[in-house]
Each structure stands twice: as C-alpha cells, then as structure tokens.
Image (cartoon, rainbow, N blue to C red; front, side, top):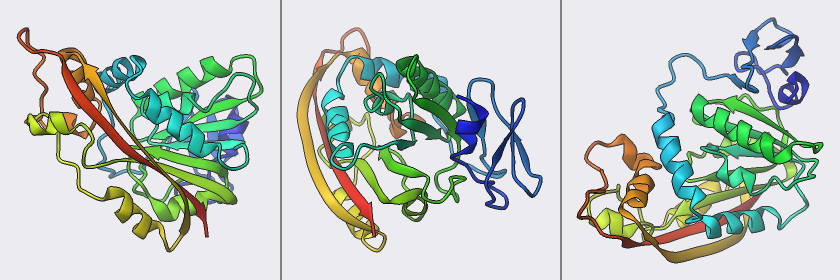
Length: 283
C-alpha cells in the first residue's frame, strides 16, 4: 500500500471531492477535510452516528477457522468463475470483505490488479488487507482497506472499480452502480432458503427468506442487466465445533438465542450449503 494507491479509490465522505495523499499518513480533499490513515493500510471513513454492527474479532476468528477448512471452497470457485466471465478485472472492490477469504481467491500471484477490501468492521478490514498483501508480496498488485458503512453513500470515486462483489453482505445497489465503470461487473452471492437448513431446523440459525435471488434481480433491474446466475448446492459434514463456527460467522451470532450446541455429547452433522451467484453489468 501507498497513500497514493489508497487515495485513487476514494472521495471525501463530506463533500465528495477526490481525496489526495498527504504525507505521512493522511488523506485530504481540496476543501480541507482530512482523514488519518492507519499504519496497517486502511482508512476509516464511517460517518458519525452510524449504528451498523461490524464483525467482532471472535466472529472473524470463527469465520477464518471454518473457511480455512475448505467448507465454502466451491462457493469461492463459483465467485471466481463469475468474476472472470468478462474482461480480466484490474480494480476490484470486495464490499463486506470479512476475513478476505473470497478476495484472496481473486488475487493470484503476479497479478497487477488493485483491490480494495471494504467492511464496517475495522478488524475485518485489517485482516483482509494483511492476507491480501501476503498473497501479492513481490508483485505489482496492491491491496488497500476502507472502513465504511455500505448503507450510506460510499466514499468511492465514480467508475473506480472494474469488479465489485459482495458475499453474504449488505448491498447498496445505487452506490455500487455509481462506483462501477460502465464496462464493469457486479457479482453477488446470496443464500437460498435451503442454505444451512439443518441448523435452522435445530433453532441454531436465523431463517432465510425464500426467493432472495429473484427479489435481488427485480431490485437491480432499473440499474443493472442480469448476465449470469449459477446455483451452488452441496452437503458438508461438520463437527460440533465447526457447526458453532458456522453460526458464529454470520448474522445469527448477533442473536443470543441462536447458539450452536458444541457440547461433549454432540455429534457430527450434515449441513447443506446452497447459494446463488448472480452477475450483473451496469445499464
């Protein structure tokens, strides 16, 4: 990361003017608004008053342990395939990056791509930036980080991304449209109603509304043209500990009534993974 590669992504969250690098560790706009940059390579541009709850270190640890076991490998492979269906992206935004697991799938050694890991959680952004940079060490690629509230106007410059993707995360379609280049691509991964149904039937996870993909396509239609949809569904066998991690890595972890039983008497269980991978291009 350099201040300059980070600044190239961003506009001022107060006046929407482009941010510029200001040594040693700040970004500033022509109007004089200034923002400190963390030494770990990211900037926090969340406006005051945001009530969004970001992932805690414990939730991120659970997610990293679970994803590191390869349980969602086919989901990541489908995302990478959808992202590569068009021209090779040079500027990638991971909106709701979490641990950076899905972004890492797009960062091949030797790449010249630039990536921005964005999340409401500073802990998530720090982890994703650290992992992405380790993958790109010695290459001309760059990974920078942004702490931002996806529900608010995003501090991204217009047409700054070739690829913007989001996996199990909030979506701000008007802002995604603005931030994408006219030739860019949006890829969204959403769960189906069958996703982790065994955990929901056991009262360990929140319900998932039916037809999420269809509702997303209808919502996106004024701004985007749907160009692809891939269904990914398979069963995994998880230990009690991994079942607890699976619950702990998602929104169910914010609800005290949704807790996995990882007691000594618990047995391994089969859990269904079921998602839709949707691809869009801007209208």
